[in-house]
Length: 78
Image: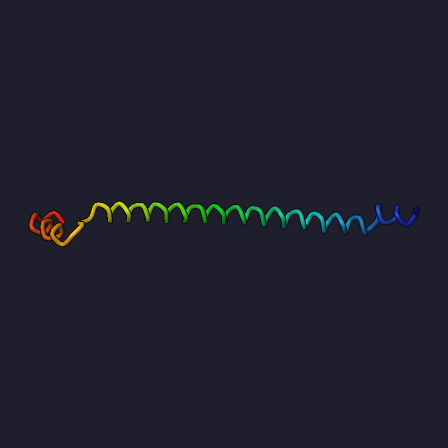
């Protein structure tokens, strides 16, 4: 029994507390870093979707055949 009490009140307890504190800070730091990376990934994916939509809109509004291209060139509205 005295061995258990000496473990709970001595150097080992302090050491365990320090290790637990460092581990807790590491977990918090990793979580913050991960959430920042997730935010950047979401931002990039949103930008990619917007670019793909603009490209699809531009393709849909573009000329359909060679005659359409010629007509636009003649009207100088290309």
